[in-house]
Length: 211
Image (cartoon, rainbow, N blue to C red; front, side, top):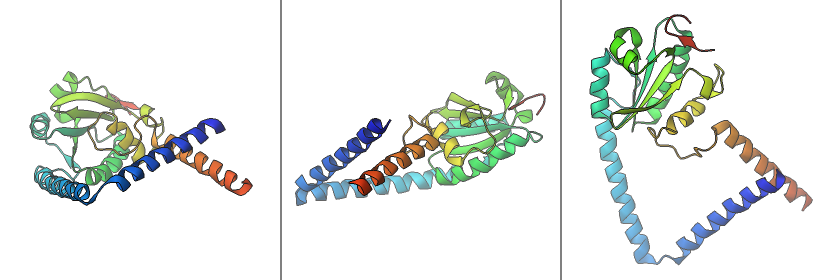
């Protein structure tokens, strides 16, 4: 394990060295081109953000019915929909996390829909367990998060854990490592840092019928 961690640290350091070498090799004209590209990207991003906010992105909102669900999916490329019911306590846990993520990920429309108002849709999508989170990309429901099993199988999972799981369906922008949950990633970082310090010194879900 120590050898693996050391290799990981060396790989990261090598990648950083390579990036620094590339920057050192750039001349003033190259830097100006990069600067102009960056400015153009920032302007495009700002325009997109305004469009997203105008469509209701940035806030965790409730849909009136299944008709509105289809309308939202037609307008937004990335949609996260929490299928819930008022008497399911775990749905309120999901609400808390999705409210945070809606403000963070304005590129994605994050909404909730009461299953009692959407019998046709829930039957079509085979939503049988609450909470269920539907992940929609380009107007197609590509993935589901059913209950809390994939979130550590615990009620006190972190917002970062839910964000990571949603990101695996590519419906939110994510800068972390999609191959490992954030809790595991933090453990690896701490282990690598600990190794460096040492070297330095020495040298149950709810269904639709019940909760």
